[in-house]
Length: 274
Image 1 (tube, helix red, strand yellow):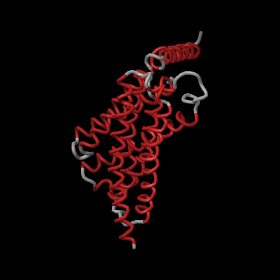
Image 2 (cartoon, helix red, strand yellow):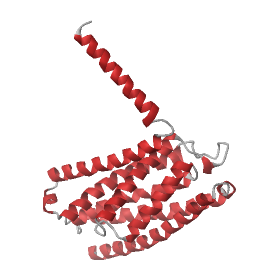
Image 3 (spheres, helix red, strand yellow):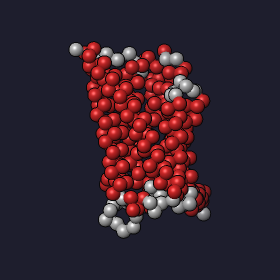
């Protein structure tokens, strides 16, 4: 047997071992959540570095930013990618997949799948990374309200992922992340000195509408859904019920407070334009 044939057989053997390792451990039902969390953390690191690299090449003003501004710039690039990912997956799982359909038998509050667990795991990885960065640079990346928001999110997502309870409502709340890219874009425009641009105004109007739909109206729908499925909700463990009622309520109050600030800022921007 020649050397090339031996090399091909060795490569195939290594490929088979690698595939077996992935299937039997990394993607096994009992390990998929841990794999996803690790993947979420690695994704954050990768996106953070790519944001730094791209910004250095394509935005001339990046080099003149302070160390803290560069940290926040890269952090917001990371949070934008996570927001796009979790919004797409949440909308698909809640509205387009059959996972939480009322047509299926059994309580909707106890449904989960490998895909739903994996998605939650990636989000856990992001929130762990972002919370660590917020605490490390505190209060440069956000005050106590951001710490509270991330802690509530982590507790809810981790519990839903490992218990398999209330994932539908967890994903409904996560759809609110659809507003994050707009918030980050507004900060980018402001930092780049484009606060008086048309793009800044359009961003403000878009963010106002997105916040109203994703963080106010959607939360009202969430409580509406809980009310009409209360017979299924009360079958869950007590801690799950506490999370389903308490976390969305607290977040809704915070969302309304932030919405008032957004409305005030939008009015101020429109007044300047006139």
